Amino acid sequence: MKFITEMELRDLYKAGPFETYVLESDTKITPGARQFLVDRRVTLVQAQGSDSKTLKIDETSRMQVRENWCTLRLLGKMESIESLFILTATEILHTGNLTLSEEVMALAKCFRNVRNAEREQIVPDNLHFWGLTAEEIKTRAENLKQSIDISEFYVGLENGKEIALLNHLRASLREVEPALLETYWDEEKQVCSRQDLIDTVNLIINILCIMMWKFSGGRKWKM
Image (cartoon, rainbow, N blue to C red; front, side):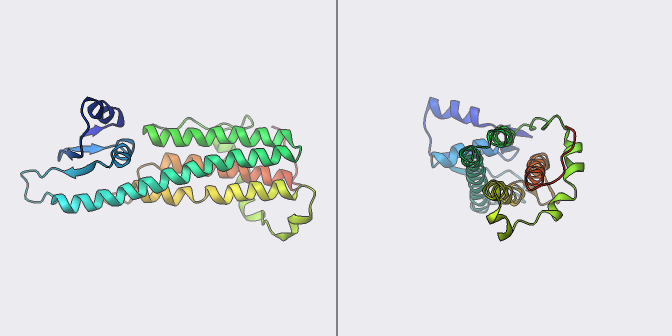
């Protein structure tokens, strides 16, 4: 199975712009390449093979349009989350908490790695934070999601704003998993082909839960 990449399409388009791109029956297209066509309003059609079971072009086109929408929704969500990281770090910095602001920015780099891995269709780098491995982060955060219940109680606390900002970022990140599932769900195998991205996003959520727990008065551990 051959995959058409964004770089290949860029080179082809540079040589001569086109309005329609025909994808051969034994060829697939990466999400980045598909987005390249969408941005330039190039119609993507699937070539019909000799096999009578091959889908008709119009049916394939409708399916690909839906996939384009899923990809656009995912890209928009990830861009929004990355901007929210920066906004959160800025707001926290203005409260005078430099250390927490720097930690949020460090976590933003972890999420940017996820975004780049999706864009380039590669495996994201292993996530390490506070010197902890992914398994250690999972273990420490295992029961925190259930124990942390952010409510109006935190509004009056001295560090209430920081906790609310972290919680908003955590809640927003939870919307990334459904977007990834919608874009990369393999109907035949009933699995998500980019579970690696979902796992990394969940690790980032775990780290935010730990941050909130520490900042709301949780006992500190040795890093």
